[in-house]
Amino acid sequence: MPDERAAALAALAVEIEACRACPLGSQRTQSVPGEGSPNAELLLVGEAPGAHEDAAGRPFVGAAGKLLDLLLNLIGLQRPQVYVLNVVKCRPPENRDPEPTEIAACAGFLERQLALLQPVIIAPLGRHALRAFAPEAKISETHGAPFQGETRQTPAGTTLFPLYHPAAALHNGALRPTLERDMGALARALPAARSTWRVARGGAGEASLSEIEAAAERDQLRLFESEAQ
Ligand code: URA
Image 1: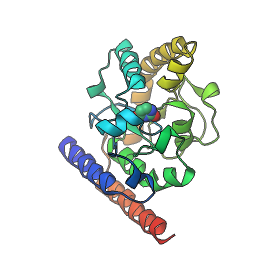
Image 2: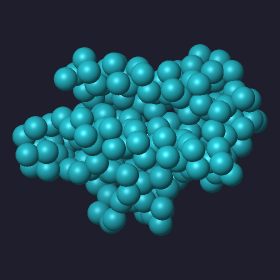
Image 3: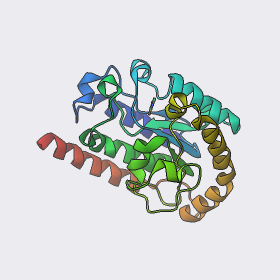
Image 4: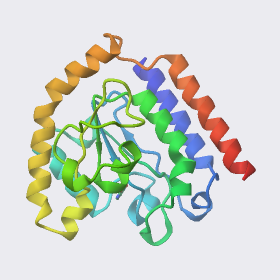
């Protein structure tokens, strides 16, 4: 199953590269589908690729990515052990915030990635990524702890653990100790999150094929709808 999951993620990356459902698809250099271990327990979700990511086709390769690596190292993790992706897969020009229509055009890809990865913890990085999972939540109030409110898109048994975006700590150095503390809290939350995940998965721990196919079908529908508009 891990090989099947890796193959399905790779096939999805090909679809993402071919996607022109919103204008970003024709403006960017390369799509940035995401990367990491297909079996990662921890999924980090950013907002959208920047200039470095657009050039490399890989997420978090610029200054924010370097800080992300340091933060992961603090809790004994290396990038290849986790999975990193963005809510929006193509770079918005001038690094502007993605438009709601662009987020909506990409939503099916995120949904299918989540169905395949089924991580123990999803850490949305910053307020824009958090909005994809908990639209009403504020990052300033929810960072550094398992999110307790209602979430959408979060697979059954997965714990949502909001973190500040590393770029925020680069702009405002005072946030860096907070982010470091929050990473420690995430590591401490992992055992309980693992138990919740195992109970919810009933020991299976894999996305069923029908779950993945259903997500793919919904995605096709969304694409047709956005093409028809
Ligand atoms: N910021 C993001 O949100 N994602 C990236 O991939 C890089 C910077």
